[in-house]
Length: 336
Image (cartoon, rainbow, N blue to C red):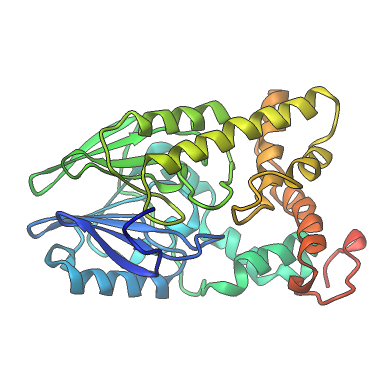
């Protein structure tokens, strides 16, 4: 049981390090981190929109002298809930893996935001994007603010007298996933390599890389794990995620070998798989990624098709959440 409560806002985790948490850790509700030493500071990730990020930065400035002007921003990966607030960290060097920077350039915010704004024209896929993310955040004014310094696999930075070790453990969750290790403080900020209390999302894979990333974290001399989503944790929660990934891989493989398609396999697995974790619908994304890996298919997934299949299960499980209203014909949904 963590000694830090899982509440919104800034949590002092000792020696000038902080975690900024957004419960419940579901779609878009991500965490960030702050590392300070004297008047120097490094921010780990921004948030999903400008108001959330502005509120976070104001809170950090009030709590830590070093946060008055952020020197360095590290984007752990390319997803918008960790990068869309970058433009507000003015004057900072923005550091990311080259894989992350490339993904941010090829998948700018405008592409996602246009889907959010036109969700009513995109059938069930659009409706679930609106339900899970679109209606909860303010995407106005976001500019694609790219990293200004990139690296391949490893990079060491300094914040005051603290050594900060960046390691690209991707592709796993995305094409480039960086963990931020502070040896002196025995802390690691994991980005979305670690989800706590919620199903992870495997956009990229391969699953072996993600399992290897968990093993890398478990091999570090650390006490505190700040995940990309969920409460401040320890190695125990990393082990739980590793178990999730290995069990899901094995369950998907059995069904793949038996000839089930990925949708049928997802429907079987989701019925009784880590049901106490939130965001169970992500099983569909993860099984689709695993099936493509088993096929040796390196092409990007058809995201809208995956979301549409996930949506059918989601509306059956939670019919009252459908933005189209009760009684909607999901089997023939083409948008409105």
